[in-house]
Image (cartoon, rainbow, N blue to C red; front, side, top):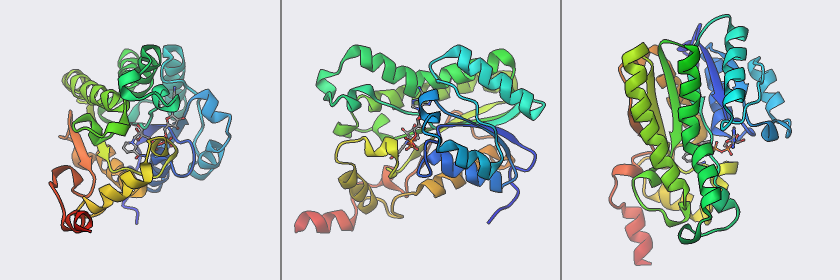
Length: 270
Ligand code: NAI
């Protein structure tokens, strides 16, 4: 059901790779709620061509940008402002990639060159995006920026590897830039800590299927889906959450505050 929550708002969505992507689901929901969109992804992801289907469905242009490249980001924000004929009201940062996970390097044996790239793509890219918007004064007063994170930033999930550190850094950037952008322009910045979700990035984690079913059993409401995450993003982009900023918001069916569930106890007793 649509509520027109984003009527008249303009947003940039990073990270729609295929129809499973959280960014893809969010773009569809934002469109349903009346937003105008610009889509972006890394040039290598655009070559897959999938994003064109989404672009057609939500009537949005696609502007390629590698999140580690400041020239690309400037070109993206300038292009988006030109397209909209004004400033941007919301941004979804739905970007993550671990080179050490890709190369099967365990946490205790990571390659530091890969690690730097991982942190740049998955965490400092939020700083780069915000800095670009800040320099261009591209986000409207009371605008909203959301980035996606995972609870491995607070608790150990061994196979999440270096992405755990990347998420901790990402959440730090949201909090710290959130202070400065709040004071300057009332722009709010939050992270959503999402349940494990069956996507390309998610499936990169070793033993992901076991991971998902464990989280499902450990969450009183079960795992939150990508579509439900999209709903939550819509509320954060809307005017109904204007005073929420610098927060890490758990969207995980209660997983984060559950010690154990009966379902897990029963499983252990078998
Ligand atoms: P996905 O694989 O569909 O999305 C990741 C996106 O990052 C892709 O579109 C990819 O092209 C983009 N990307 C990678 N390197 C880039 C670069 N250099 N420049 C620009 N874009 C780049 O997977 P998903 O799951 O939708 O991931 C979105 C976000 O959600 C990520 O931050 C992920 O860590 C986070 N998240 C995912 C969970 C899951 O279980 N799937 C759980 C909690 C958070």
